[in-house]
Image 1 (cartoon, rainbow, N blue to C red):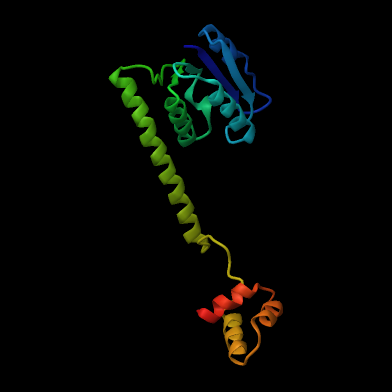
Image 2 (image 1 turned 45 degrees about the vertical axis):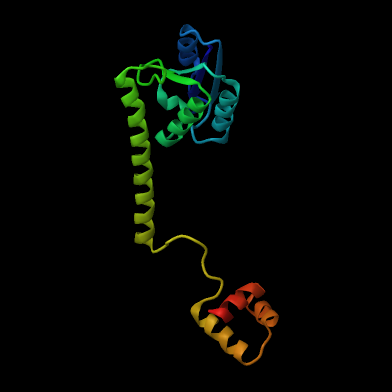
Length: 182
C-alpha cells in the first residue's frame, strides 16, 4: 500500500506549496500536481496519469475533495474509477475516506453520488429552460426552408433531376431524396 498525493490549483498565479507540504506530511510517496482549471485537458491528463499509476491497495490523498475536479459529477466519476481499481480516496480535511468502515463515511460517499446526480439534473434543467426561452431546441437547422421544400417537391413532380435540384439549392442529393419521401 502506498500513499499517492494529488494537488491542484486553478490558476498559474496560485501556489501549490501548502498542498504539497500537507501531502508530504501525510506520508505521500509520490505526488501528482498541476496548475490549471479543473475543466482543462491538462487537469484530465494529470488525473489520467494518477489513475494509471495507482495500484490495488493504494490510497489517493487530497487536501480537499474539490482538488480532484471542478464538478461533483467529475469528482465522483474519478472516485468510482479509482475504487474499481481497488484504490481508496482520502481527504486530509476528513470529508472523505473510502477505506473507512464507519457508517458516517459510507453515508458521506453515498451522498456524494446523490449530490452529483442532483447537480446533473439542475444543469440539464437550466439548459432546457434556456432552450425554451430562446426558442432554440438544439440540433442542426434544416437545410431547406418550408417554402424551398415545397418548390423542390413541385420541381420533382415536373421531372427535374435530384442531382440538378441538389446543385440548385446547394444541398446534398440525399436531402432532395428525403424531401421526395416526406
